[in-house]
Image 1 (cartoon, helix red, strand yellow):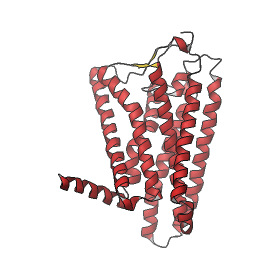
Image 2 (tube, one colour; image 1 turned 120 degrees about the vertical axis):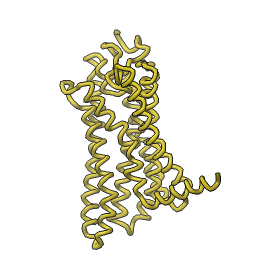
Image 3 (cartoon, one colour; image 1 turned 60 degrees about the horizontal axis):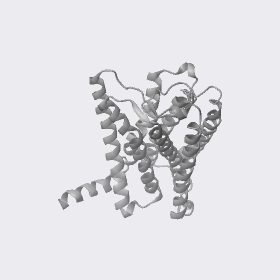
Length: 310
């Protein structure tokens, strides 16, 4: 194939060769999708219906739940369809759309996680200024900035990636359309056009990570000065899971996009993509939100109220 205009479809990675393993992968993907839909759906419903949860922290959690649902709905349905019907094809337009929405939701999620870190920093280190720094207008502006930045980020990368001439076939070594896999199909002279945006994005994401680390250093210093051991334990229990998932997401995503070609293998690429594209959206509701007592109580009231109505 001389260029991308001659490509009408791409071939995604086959997750398994035998029918039994294909059905097993379908069941695993279905379980991940249902867990993400259930957990994030409960969060969205509880925060939207519970007026006492209309605070900055839960507002950002609601936005995070929306991005998690978007991430899952962008990649998992196509992978489930491929496993169930034993097909690997995805149209050229469908691949471009999948890449755009995946980058959009992943970018939104990471920017929102950074904002949530700022929310915790202000609430613990500057509690007297919390209402001023995180008023309703400020929260709306920060959430809108996260979504808009992710939109521009995904638009830039999608347009740049699919403007490259593709000279090395149409087989992608991944179960969804991903930038590194598409770059491997591009001509050697045009490959460098995408290196700049990818490296620039890596520095942007690393800058957010440095902000998160710096904020948590200040948070931990403030928490250690809390005289109550119970207060310290409560603060650490909410901060450490957040930092762990952000670190997992950033390290695997950066390594997947910037690792040298000599280290690439189908199994490694698949494992890394699952770690940063499927695991965080499925686990976020349980790590960040369902551990919260206020949200737990709101979910229980909502579920019990729905049962009483019926």
